[in-house]
Amino acid sequence: MRDFHIETPRLILRPMETSDLEALLEIFGDPKVVASFDTEPFDRKQVQRWMQPNLEHQETYGYGLFSVIEKAEGMLIGDCGLEHMHLHGEPVTELGYDFRSDRWNQGYATEAASAVRDYAFGELGIPSLISLIRVGNQASRRVAEKVGMRLMEEITINRIRYWHFVIHRRTA
Image (cartoon, rainbow, N blue to C red; front, side):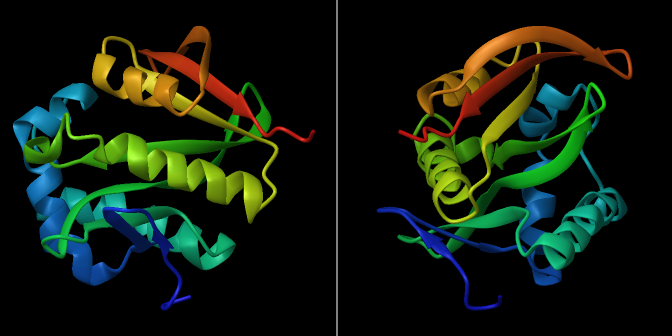
């Protein structure tokens, strides 16, 4: 799995590694990034706790949240990938993404999310994807819409309001 990657014109998405901690700390330690989570910036231990379930998910399924590397600078600029979870008691696969604030509004999230969507549908044969986006996070909502997702409903999970987006694989 170490050699696995997804490539787009500007990005390389590869499995997340423990050595990505410092770059992810820069992302999740940024008040602008974590504002969408309605929390304070993460410290090192919080980023480690955030990473651990993803590393375990990768070990179990062979994929999870990929580290997103900008080709031009070779810099880790975000994460984008898939997570199996349960919603309304049913198994679902969520497409999620987080990016450095200095890379916002440059199309990176849409480029990465589109590549992961295509990988999920084409290579993995996953029938549908969801995204749970905190109500009010217009930037993430635009990314979901640009990759073809449709708003299904507003839901509350652990007293937090989310937009529930979905996209289905085309079988025709």
